Length: 196
Image (cartoon, rainbow, N blue to C red; front, side):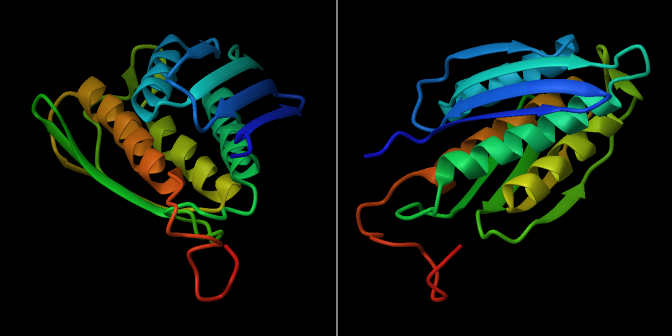
């Protein structure tokens, strides 16, 4: 099996980002975005998806956390797409309903090559730690479009914003882990079109 590892770097006037992901890792991570709560969420994503993940970000946090988090989503999505290559042999679809204390979330993903993002849920406050809660939507929207995946995320129940956000990141990890899993029964790509 070829290594499914990719590194993507991106630099703009607002951010300088480097992401490396190994889709067949063990959940190791080395993450520094400058936003502590966001680091914690990405660590959970790596650990629960069993992805080895390195993320290094220099962002214009003197403005706010928007560019840092959105651009990290863009680069992480690009890295996922690059690591997948032509997607031969993958299951393509993944979904999970994940509980975290009083919170319950649903995440479903299709690595179809067609970006589309649907998010349903609300947060009680403007911030969780040093991260704007609005950036949860922006981060996953950026991933869906840069990775070329159909991504649905729904907060089904919950009160605590920390639990809601952490459950979303973990559910995304678990659903993606299923979708990128290689199935020996799939010898090309799982599509009647012949490509994803």
